Image 1 (cartoon, rainbow, N blue to C red):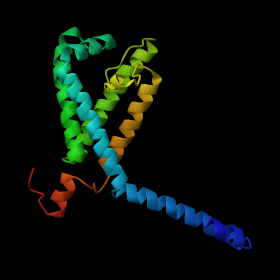
Image 2 (image 1 turned 180 degrees about the horizontal axis):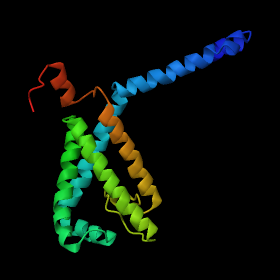
Image 3 (image 1 turned 90 degrees about the vertical axis):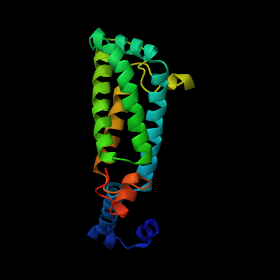
Image 4 (image 1 turned 60 degrees about the vertical axis):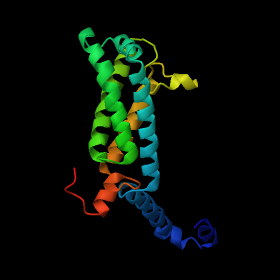
Length: 189
């Protein structure tokens, strides 16, 4: 396309031919993403792995996760033990379902809800001027800081948008949902 532009007499540029070609390319990319792409599927699997890892680390040490929840100072103290036990299992199951591609729309909706809740909790503490390890993905073990900051709110916002995309994708490669659809197994829950 660049070579064609350099060799043209300018009439194609004036007519908008190249503008139309670039718009068609953008439309094609968006259509491929919405109708399913291997890149989106790979991102789904990697995100699922991250959720499984994070959930398992919290399941292993619920007391430490409970202490992190207390630091947010948002939920009543009586709820902390229940959240510290239940949330890691929800996170782990969501990750497993994302990795296997089972009930992707439902899991995407659950993940979006979690991202909104996490973003609000982090944003409230950013406004309060507090800084502590968020207890999000347990990445501190790898030297990656996860201190409460606006960066984490933005990261959770990006994850929210990714889950919103997953919710709307029409076909998911490498997924049980896709296998079920291909084989006409709609009645199997």
